[in-house]
Image 1 (cartoon, rainbow, N blue to C red):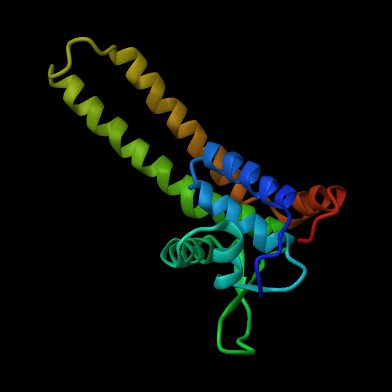
Image 2 (cartoon, one colour):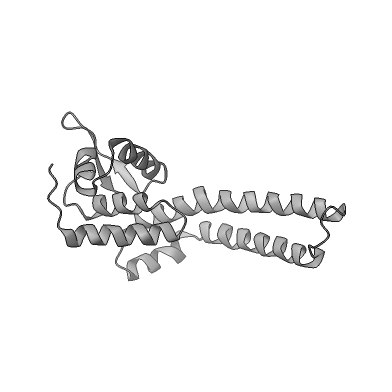
Amino acid sequence: MSANVSKSVLNLTEEIGNFIQYWGFKKIHGKVWALIFLSEKPVDANFLIDNLGVSKSLVSMTIKDLLVYNVILECPKEGPTLCYAPNLKIKDVIFDVLSQRESVMLLKIKAACRLASTSNSQGMETEISNKRLSQMTLMVDAAGSYLKKLLTLNEAKILPLFKKMNLKE
């Protein structure tokens, strides 16, 4: 596969990279995912390197990350190189990212809240409001509860939403 993607498509991958970066991922994650998603056929690392103008090691690390988040899939090997395709099961992609990333982030925030509460209750912090620290802890708990409810929505409730958006399950 050669570098033959138009400047307008590369601009689109750039904008998707910016959007993905806004949500806390690396910009390259969005750019690589977008190019894989937009490609008619599965693509190999060389296609990504040639079109995005980035290093082999960066593409390799990015592919590894995207595979962990289940947003791309490794295709059966047909030639000397591995190829990748987008995971078109959008519900699975969204839920995997939420459960693997946001759930872990909320657990870390919750632990940090407990630690801050402990140091605050021991008088180590003089400028911090106990009331606001408690409110923050409640907000984090609520966010965790909402995320857990979202992740446990049954198929009967979530599938109609995806069908309305004309997305695969």
